Length: 88
Image 1 (cartoon, rainbow, N blue to C red):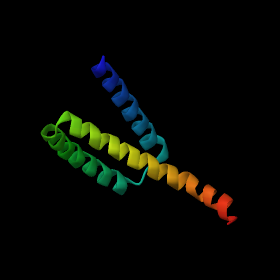
Image 2: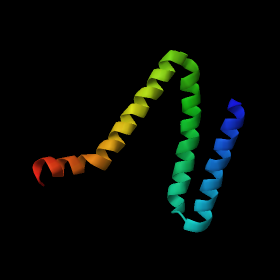
Image 3: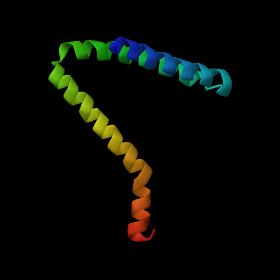
Image 4: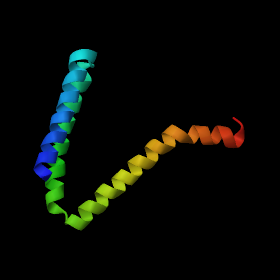
C-alpha cells in the first residue's frame, strides 16, 4: 500500500511539473541548477539516512519540518501582528 501511495504521489508531482514546464516557460537556467541540486541532495540524503538510527532520523525530519513551518508562518503573518500591535 505504501508503494502505491508513493507511485501515485510521484506521478502527480511529475504531471504538475510537466504542465508547468509546458505552459509557463520557467527560466531554464534555474531548472538546470535545481535538477542538479536535487540529484545531489537525493544521493547525500540517502547515504546519511542509511547511517542514522530510525529514531534519530525521525527527530531530524520533525525538527526541520517544525523549523520550516515556523519560518513560513512568521514570514506570512508576522507583519500583520506587528502592524496591529504597534500601529505601523
